[in-house]
Length: 257
View 1 (cartoon, helix red, strand yellow):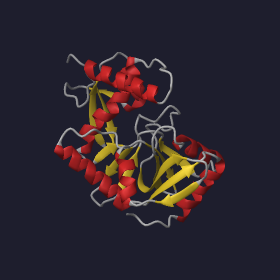
View 2 (spheres, helix red, strand yellow):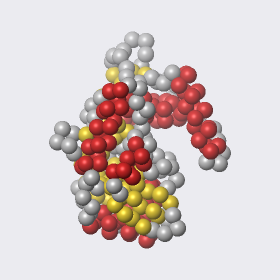
View 3 (spheres, helix red, strand yellow):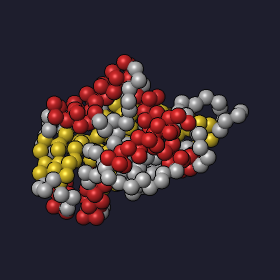
View 4 (tube, one colour):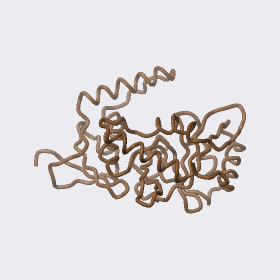
């Protein structure tokens, strides 16, 4: 065998990787283990690696942030999320940009673009009520659509710069989803499908390549909106906003769409 192939499981589905750069596997930590085979599902080509670096630099420039000089290994690791979603979407699974945590036997998602306070809300809650919640994944959990229509959230190696989560983190059925945005006041309201769909669609880590992938992704999002309530939280990132979030989820009065 000429290549070293490593395997990782997401929601019970095996995905095999061939790595381009030395040390890229280390970003997976205990998630990836060597397998004795030659077939693989995911490989970041040199061209794809350069494209990913260019896009990353453009995003930093757009946000007015300096380029920290990401290593090739790190850029490869970031790029593998989207590539991994292609084999997963065939099984009704996909990575989703959110902080996922376990509370009262259910998984809850805090979603939205980078910088709106997802990690802040989780860390506030953890500090204010340390015995209540357990992290599932701090950045890109795997969402799974099951045959009974339920949506489950699972951990992944992509757990954010705060490293919230591990391969030992729990999985759980989804209880609800909160779309975050920053604001000068703290407000939370239930949101309808017409408003939620554009925001949620951008948070799935997948650019469909085929009509079937579009259909599979649409089915997953439709199941998500039917299974759980969705709220929009405008927040200042302070303790009051977190208490408002907690009390709203505790009430859980909004019906699924």
